[in-house]
Length: 157
Image (cartoon, rainbow, N blue to C red; front, side, top):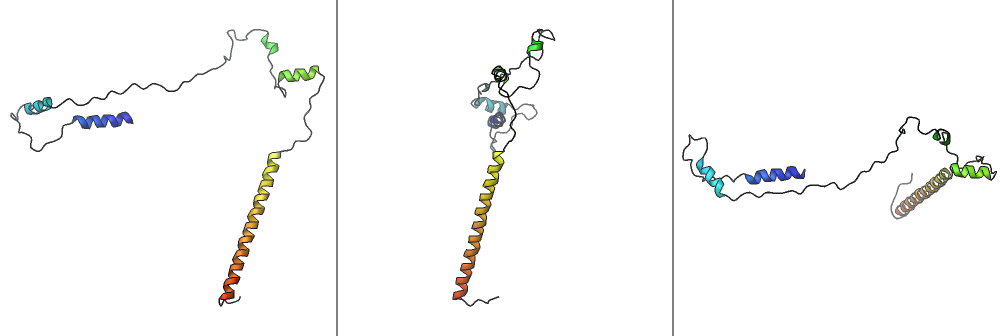
């Protein structure tokens, strides 16, 4: 975008201004006007802009593990030492430590979602505040109407 604007500005700056009082051409059958060439040579050289080279201001590093070893199966030892199932809770080392200490791991019997309970309590409090504000607004309107009708002649429905 910036280089396009600079290019247009340079193109407009290079063109000479058109003067209505320019001298008539000396020899109209020549394909080139000598007077025009002389006037162009007498003008100072146009300004040249040199733009600095743009350098990257970011760095990308891609780290990836090879999916396969040099030989397709890899070392034979990795076949029985690599875990293939899901990782136990707490990681493999914590699981092994619990087994050595003869501790058992069991799933909890009851699970409580505290976030949904907190959301429900928050919603109930917000609804109660809104209902109280609406009731206070209705009561204020009723009082204002009663005061107005006490000082003015209002038809009773």
